Length: 156
Image 1 (spheres, rainbow, N blue to C red):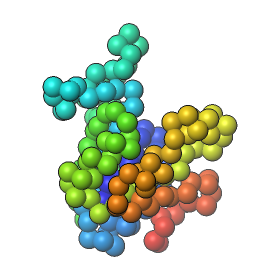
Image 2: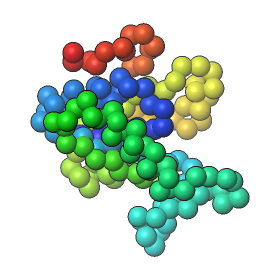
Image 3: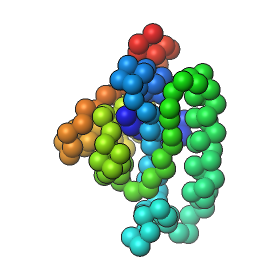
């Protein structure tokens, strides 16, 4: 199972991913796709910023920060088997490729933040969930994020 994450992701997405993984007896692969970076054609394990003049934190620093936050969150679920995969490029393509590579059973994604700015970004970039649903055959579980509705995991 792949749980798509980003910095600042609401906990209900993670909680839902953990609950579904428990129900399916599956390992959780938390996948972050850095959209401001592109994979190196000669070495897929490295990436370069799209804008080399912009100040960016290193890939290792970003991955370490996300891993630390996930490790703290997952300490409440010591029985869960999980890992973090840090990718770069277009989210739908990278997530679909990862799913094919590890033979993942499904995806868990959250909805975008509410508001005009997020709506415009989704209109310009497209919905990752919709693109995944169209381009591959694995189920896509979408966790609706509506503030107070999601204080508890889906399967409590």
